[in-house]
Amino acid sequence: MTNTADKGDRLASAVSRIRGLLGEANCLVEPAAVEPYVVDFRRLYHGSTPLVALPSTTAEVSAVLAVCNELGVGVVPHGGNTSYCGGATPHAAGDEIVVGLRRLNRIRELDPANHSLVAEAGCVLADVQRAAESVERLFPLALGSEGSCQIGGNLSTNAGGLAAVKYGVARDLVLGLEVVLADGRVLDELKSLRKDNTGYDLRHLFLGAEGTLGIITAASLKLLPRPRTIETLFAAVADPEAALELLGRLRVASGDDVTTFELLPRSAVELVCEHVNPTADPLGGTHAWYVLCEVSSARDDPSLRAAIELELERALEAGLVIDAVFATSGPQREALWRLRESIPEAQRRAGASLKHDVSVPVASLPAFVARASAAALAVVPDARLVTYGHAGDGNLHFNLSVARDGDDALFLARGSDVEAAVLDIVREFRGSISAEHGIGQLKRAQLKSYKGPVALSVMHSIKQALDPNGIMNPGKVLADR
Ligand code: 2HG
Ligand code: ZN
Image (tube, rainbow, N blue to C red):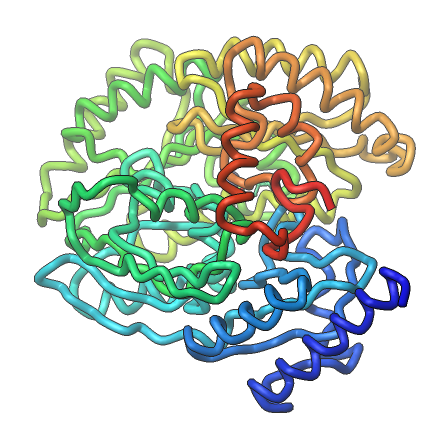
């Protein structure tokens, strides 16, 4: 028997054993049913799989992985399919089994006194937020995709999002984890403790590992008091430097309660107005840069608005802020958020785009934007720069859209040159080539040159220790298929 035939036999055997384990109803094999699981959100990859397994308990996940490990068959964990890097999409060879977590979607525990809840991996993020709200608590992870992404994916990719400036990234919001390891063993570290100083902190191995070390099946998540006062403002600012100066001032004026601080260029507002909503621009006039800022307090605090207004007046006098508007109602606040959250969709509708999810130390942002903009435009002079994002975290989506009447293919053909130029500058600033979207299959090559040899070697040792047969999300992050 040849190796290929042997591989085919092992795959067929895994498929049939898993169908027996989960039942036909929970195993998708028809091409039409499988299709949504093999195409990534950005449509960069089109993979193939003989089976999408849909377990609904940790024990079932464990049984599926045990079979795959025994037979040496690759497994691709799959949540809400919102990855930007193809992390949840199988390869085109069709030799991996997809494990969809959506049926593993219970809130196992809701404990307002402990400020925690336990959610299974397939819970949609918005449902986790709602569960917290139902007991006057906040689960602060906030993402544009929160209506469809799943908490298991958020944790596996260590998602960042729109409120990290105050609450941190996904990794910072986890008290404990339950993980099924490659060989099917269940690692039960599902504790809801604030203090547990007992050796290696294993949860952090799996947070951000993108399913390459095991499958997160449940997590104990940190909750906070639900905010009772929220002030949302949209301001035109002179430049990124002014935006950061404003951030510093608002942090102090609010008692360090800035929860969102997003930077938007004029081009992003114009793209949203042109492609999503013609009335999205909240300010008159044309300004180079804008800031969407939210300040929230757990207290009923009528003085917060006055404190922010006073600081804004000072910033206007100092020429940092050119114009500003506060949301005075729920719908107004939603409209401001919609403007920000519509940028990816507007960019999609505007034609081809090049995206770089990068971070630098917050104070270096203005210099980075100036340098990277010049470098990118030197390669694609007529492109539209759409540099926006989580300025409060030093994380920008350094994106470009094709010129209005430009040729998509010609523009995309320059993509690797633009990327090389931008990432060189990121390195100069000791920044990150992937601030919040992870590595997946998209950025494996960049990771190799970004991480030092010692870091890469430690990562390979961890992979080897936890997944010696290389079945967990093969070819993602660092494993070469
Ligand atoms: C956001 O911040 C997302 O809206 C998507 O991270 C970023 O489309 C992008 O580049
Ligand atoms: Zn983002």
